[in-house]
Each structure stands twice: as C-alpha cells, then as structure tokens.
Amino acid sequence: MSKIPDTLPLCAHYDEILRRQLPLLDVRAPMEFSRGALYGSVNLPLLTDTERAAVGTCYKQQGQQAAIALGHQLVQGEVKAARVQAWADFAKAHPNGILYCARGGLRSQIAQQWLADAGVLYPRITGGFKALRQAAINAIAQVASQPLLLLAGPTGSGKTRLLTQLQAVDLEALANHRGSAFGRKLAAQPSQISFENNLAARFLQVQSTQPPFLLLEDESLLIGQRNIPHALYQAMQQSPLLLLEEPLSARIEVILQDYIIDLYAEAVATVGQQGFEVFSDMLRQGMARIAKRLGGALYSELAAMLEQALSAQQQTGDINLHRLWIARLLTDYYDPMYQYQLQKRSLPVLMRGNATELSKWWQQQRG
Image (cartoon, rainbow, N blue to C red; front, top):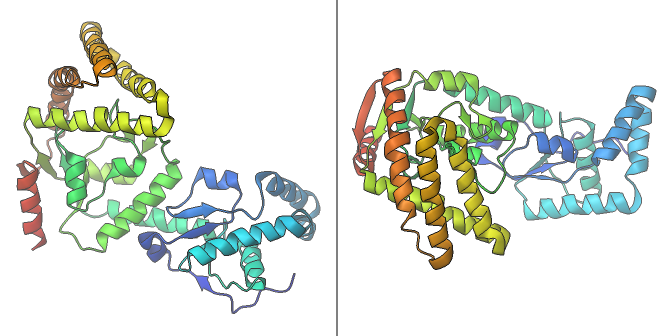
C-alpha cells in the first residue's frame, strides 16, 4: 500500500461534529461499536471482531509490521472490494460525513486511502472516536459547572411534552426510557457511552440557541439502566425548579396516552400478532417492580385492576378501565412520593403553573 498523502482531508472540529450530528462512518470492529457509538454513525468495519482479534494477537507476538501484513492478508480481493464499496456507498449517500476509527490511527488511515484509491476523497477525524468521546466528556463537564434549571412536576403532568415544546434537554428520550417503573420501551436503551455522547451533542445544540437557562427534566440518578454523569447529577441536585402543575384528570390522560395507547401501538408495530401479549407483560412487570413499595394490599388491588383493564381491552378494545388503576396509582403512590422528595430537597422554585403558563414565562425570559 502506498504512503498516505498529506492532502487527504482531516477534521478536528469535535464540538461541531457532535453538535451537528454529522453522518459518521465508523470503521471500528462491531464489538467496539456496540460498547459506545455516536448519533448518526454507521458501523462498516475494516476488520471484523475475529479478524481484529487475530491481528491483535499477531501484534503482541510478532510486532506491528507482521500485524499489518496479516490484516492485508485477511482483507484482500473480494472481501476488500466489498468493504470499500460499502464505504463508497456511504460516502455517496452522505457527502457531508466523516470517517473514523478508535484513535484516528491506522484503520481509519487505511480506509481513507482505499477510498481515495477508488476515487472517493472522504475526511477522517483526527484522534478518532477517542477524541470525540473526550469532547463529549468535556461538554458535559462544562454544563455541570454552569447554572441549570430543572422542570419538575408530578407523574403524568406532561413534562416531556413541555420540554419538547421549549426545545430543552430531554434526558428520557436520550436514554430511551420514560424514567419510571413502567418506563421501559421495546427498543433497547443505548449503551452508557452512547447515552453520554448523545447527551453532550444535545447540550451543544441547545447551548447554540443561547437559552436563558439550560433546562432539563428533574430526574433520579438512574434512567432505566443508564445513569446521569455524576458531576451533572450533583449540579442538578442544587438547581432551581420550574414546577409543572396539571389537574389529575389531565395527568391520567397523559399516562393513558403514553403507557397504554402508544405502548400498545409500538408493541403491535414491533412484534405483530404477539403485540398485546408483549404490551400486557410490560405493564405487569412495571407493577411488579414497585410491589414492595406499594405494600401487599395495595399491590394486590392494583394488579387486579390492571388485569380487569387488560381483559376488557383485549375482548372489546375498550381502554376506559385503565383510567381507574392509573388514577389510584397516581394518588396513592406517585403523588405522595413526589411531594416527599420535593420537600426533602427544598430547592428554590422560580415559577409554577400549567404548561401554558410555564411556556409563557419561558418566552419572557428569552426576551
């Protein structure tokens, strides 16, 4: 292989890459990609996991040159042609994209050179995924050092809807989890590294609009199986609040939409005829997760109400009975817990009101 010329394009604008969430051609091995990636990245590896393991072993035993030679031996002929074609197709589909490997080293250099040999000039990221990852860590640390504003409110008050309206930071969306015992979704949560990378990207996007405050939802440390970075969580625990207050009737409808209507539709779209069974099991599992905190009597009552609602829904399509157990769960479990946690923290409240009132206040702050 010829020496890689200095004229091939490089890119080191890490914050800009994260903020714009540019299309990214990730040539790392699949195992590396699964541990952590970036939004918009597509894994088209130079080496498979097996090939990378073989090259790594060769490097340890015989040195770099032998490892490079083995890599070329493993990826040649039709195998090489297929991988280069896949990269070229990506570059054609995403002319504003960039490629990278783990550290901006040999793998991305080779991929860039092979693309150039095929007539495709495509930039690569200096420092690779490691550099982007460090930029993401720095972006989160910077946010944790500045004033934040948290949106709080009882379960079902519509915080996610208001965050979307205000173009704020939706931690639950980034974690792909609604943040409660019933919050699991059918699609898997991102890895912790991917969650943090995408969180940093969202912070950079919101900051570019110069909001009056960096607004995000008041969350516990864990969102499903993903955890908020420690420094950020500590900053959140000392930040002032906006309190979203909606009547119980409205909150019941929000829960009904999110956890019954939308979840059922998602299950059917994902698994087809087994959708109702999957949907029902997810609700039962959610209730079971808080069984100890509910106590035996209340758990038994709520579980029975849930089964009645599911039976009616399955037989007739009527979802009205779901409103009964949702109302009971809110008033007897979630609301007392919310009030206790709110009083325990004693954080300053800048504004309280319904979604319309908070939205109007927010726009006033923007000037």
